[in-house]
Image (cartoon, rainbow, N blue to C red; front, side, top):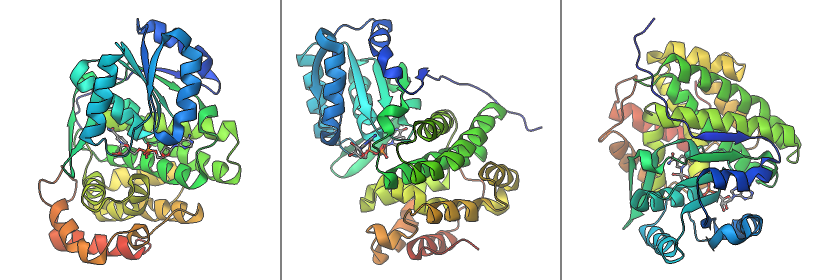
Amino acid sequence: MNPFVFQARIPRVVFGAGCLQQLEREVDLLGARRALVLSTPEQRISAQMIADRLGTRCAGIFDRAVMHVPIETARAAREKAARVGADCAVAIGGGSTTGLGKAIALESTLPILAIPTTYAGSEMTPIWGITEAGVKKTGRDPRVLPQSVMYDANLTLGLPVGLSVTSGINAIAHAAEGLYAQDANPIHSLLAEEGIGALAAGLPKVVASPGDADARSQCLYGAWLCGAVLGSVGMSLHHKLCHTLGGTFNLPHAETHTIVLPHALAYNAPAATTAMARIAAALGVSNAAQGVFDLASRLGAPTALKDIGMPSDGLDRAAELATTNAYGNPRPLDRGAIRQLLQDAWEGKRPA
Ligand code: NAD
């Protein structure tokens, strides 16, 4: 058995369809009296529903969360939190809203109660990201890890089917890379396998019946586990590629993960055979890279970078950036081979 170091800091989790009923208790447990509710403009109605539940314990709503946390938005949210005397942030939404809560916590240590409504997994990680002058900076800081997380599948029933699929595969990507991480360990590998299996089983049911609360719960359960892996072990080539493509070419987050993952797995397969076998087994297929590609195609997700706005003349630059300051990776990074990987992902080829 390989030697390992295990360490975990996972927030308190309240899980179950309808668990939002326990919101007031969770706010009480934080010792908070004046919650600032965060959301995107699109989820303002959900934020208002939280505010109504909290009544006098709600200090206000800030509904301007957007992808990649622009510094101007972070500053405006921090100012509002200070102005209304908030003593906790309740973030209802996906990774963009949780990310805004983290940007506030980074400077104020305001505790975060996260109510995730996608499968991105940010609520389980101490990773923050803020974009300034078009450049996204990220870092790890224990202060930004939410203190409490409520997973209520009823809040995900309206997550559009397309985003459900790509967000679910985004979560699978965290677990897949966790299985071949340099600091992989037996506990997080078990979480990763279980998380991939839950999403691979749940996503087709969500596509068939988006209002199926059991299928939604199964996906949210998978997202929780995959997020816990992301928060605890290091990520590799796949996350570096997606970070580069998202940051430099402004590609949509979950779709980019969905398209790139099969190709990153195919690249790493010769150097991570045990991890690939575990990913394939969790997916119920014989080849991990092809299994992810087939899952995405079967569920109607995009499979080609050219279809989500990636310019073909950006591929050289992307290959260069992805191999500069690279994250640890099981297979050494070869610029030419990464350029070919990006070409295949751009064209939407099924991995060989
Ligand atoms: P998102 O939060 O940007 O949400 C996408 C859209 O879907 C938004 O308009 C949102 O309001 C809407 N939406 C979310 N849940 C909904 C629901 N249940 N019903 C209807 N609409 C809903 O998307 P995301 O993929 O969750 O997050 C992406 C962002 O999160 C990126 O910026 C990414 O870098 C970041 N992220 C960070 C981490 C981390 O650990 N720090 C992890 C994963 C993602």
